[in-house]
Structure formats: C-alpha cells, structure tokens
Image 1 (tube, rainbow, N blue to C red):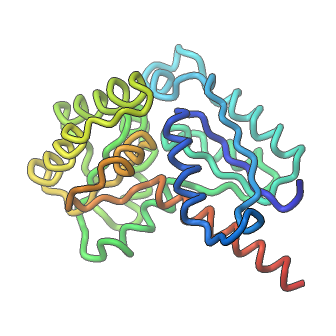
Image 2 (cartoon, one colour):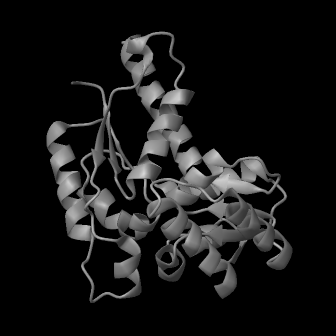
Image 3 (cartoon, one colour):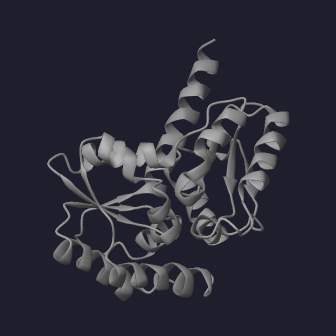
Length: 241
C-alpha cells in the first residue's frame, strides 16, 4: 500500500475504536476509494502510561512505543499520529525517532481553544492522573497565554472512576451522568471557561454523551480533524501532479 499514514493506538482499544469511527465518519466519501489509506497499530499491550508516570520504578512504556515507530518507519507512511494523550509525555523522543511528521495531540488541542472559545482565559484539564501529574498539557496551555487549572482531588477521583471503572473495565460503557457531573463541577467549582478533554476515554464519553452545554475542547475530535486535513492535503497534492 502506498500513500497512507500510521495510527499508533490501543491505549486503550475502545478509545482508539472511537477515533477510527470519527475519522471515517468525517471523511468526505461517496465510494470505497474515497476513504483514507491508513495502518492502525492497536498495540493493546503497551504498559500502562499512568502507572509509570506516577511511579518510575514501574515498566516504562517508551521502549515499546519506540519499537512501534521503528516498525512503521520501515513501511514508509506519510505521517504518524498517536491517539493517547498520556503517551505524549514522550512526544519529543517519539518524534525524533520518526522518519516522517508526527502529529502532536496536546498542541493541536490547545490551538483549538481559540477557535471554539475565543474569550476563554481559565482552562480546566480533565485527564488521567498521569497526564496531569507529568505536565503533558500544562506548559502548552500556559505558553498559549491561558491560565491552566488542574482538577481538585475530588474531581480527579470522579475522572478516574469514569476512565478506569466505567469505560476501561466495562468495555466502553459510558456513565453519562458521571461525565456530565464532572463537567459541571469543573465549570461551577473551578470557574473554568473551557475544559480540555485530555484523555481519549473522555473523548469516548463525549462521543456517546454529547447532550450537554458545557464548553469542552475534545482532544480526540481535534486530532481526528487534523489527521483528516493532512491526509486530504497530501492526496490533493499528489493528484495535482
């Protein structure tokens, strides 16, 4: 196969399934050949990202992902995208190992804030404990000129319950009431103007329970759009030659 991109996924699998579904639904296609060419690496056995980031004595997930990047390099994709926010802790190392452009989910998500909520100033981060504790998003949010607000311990526990108990343990089940409660707590208690969904399980929650009016910026939806834009741009450039 030629003219394709590679998706590093499986962290977790149900969230990756959501990304693929969104990507395909948004692709302007009238027949089979209009859809995008891509390789999905659903590497479900990548060591847990949060476990390592909270305790560096645990298994480091970077070597596993570097192997994935090297495997994809040998296939010569046009670009790579990784659909796990927490794994972007090692973005610089993975990007350096890649022979092709490697999209950055947190950076693209923060850029999306000004388009969706141009007057926003206080940005809440809803994510795994690993993402919050390791600073995957905070420097990018602050560099963009926003005030970054981490979840309170009580809200973080609710986020953990939604990610790990509701979605991961129950194979994609979304507790919509819990999800909406988290958003309400962040807006009302933390006084944020917008909320970054900085975990792809939370993106799955947004896909399945979008019936709310809270100001969310969905990282997975954003990176799906950027992936689609780049893939279509490259296709158009080749067709024009």
